[in-house]
Structures are given as structure tokens and as C-alpha cells.
Image (tube, rainbow, N blue to C red):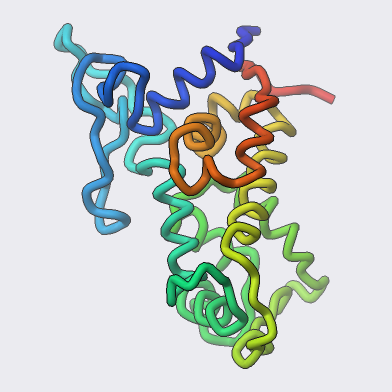
Length: 225
């Protein structure tokens, strides 16, 4: 079993977020690729099949084509705070469910629809998606575990965007800490520490600050037991 210290993990995480300690260049000496066409096509991420100076090709990374964690969070945040007023409201949540999750327009969101949105639409991981789904406390009705019509006119619901982001971040932190091999094998977990240090929005969140203060070691073998 190989163990990576938080410092080593931070350097790796920064590299896979398109940042580094060497002025915006990746570990192979070239400029860190950006995320040129958010979800319109395959964006390029650091190490994602890029040539290294010796002429060889790097192996496709777990983050290939996914951009940064901050960018993926920003897409979801922008939809749920569509008017950019710093609050997530009932009608905004309703529109997100209706326009982005409920693919068959039956007024319900199933686990399959949820995973489709998170994995394909937001390019987040299945482990993160499934744990966030569990946090919704879906009903036992497998045909219609989550309904959302009541959000449409619920103007009393007004959640600060920071709390919305923090809820998602806490689920991700818990996911990554539950099996620290995910800090290498799962793109969301791999990029988490770097995003919590460098992303302007995420680094300001209290969940990220707590994670940076107490990061965990990464292993390349799953935790057993």
C-alpha cells in the first residue's frame, strides 16, 4: 500500500485542477489546459492525454475532459442561483429539477435520472452523486422517490448560496473520507484539496477551510472494514 501525505496530495490535486506551484504550468512543463467549452464537448484537463517533453503520451487521467471541480460546482450553483442574488429559492430549485433532472416529465426524479444529471450533465462522480441523493432522503416509492412540484411557488425557501455550496461540499468531503483511496481514483476527491485552496468560491466556504486544516492521507488500496 502506498500512502500519500497531505502535502503530496495537495501538489497532485493542484496539478489536476489546472494549477500548480510553478506559475500555472502543469507538471510536464506545459501550460495547464483550460476548460474551453463547458460541457459542449470534451474539454481538456491536466495530464488528459497531453504529450510530455520526452515525446511520450501520458495516460488518460480520471479527470480527463472534466475541467476543474470549481467549474463543475459553478455550473450547478449558477443554475440554482439563476438570478445571481446570492440565494437559492424554491422556484430556482423547481426549475433545476424540471429542466435538468425529470427527463420524462412525470413530476418525479428517480435515482437513474439523478445519476444521469450528475455524471453526464455536471461531470461529477457516481460516488458523490449517490451520497448526495441519499442526503435528499428520497421516499421508498421507487417509481417516484423525489417529487418537486411544491418548490414551484415556495418563495419562503431562500437558502444562502454559501449554505447550498457547503451542503454539497460536506457530502463530497464525507464521501472522500469514507474511503481514502478515492483521493486518487475519483476525480472529485482528487481535485478537492486543490480546489479548496485555489478556487475563489470554494476556498471561502467553511467546509473547505475545515478540510484544508485537516486533510487526510491518500492510499492506492481501498479501505477494508
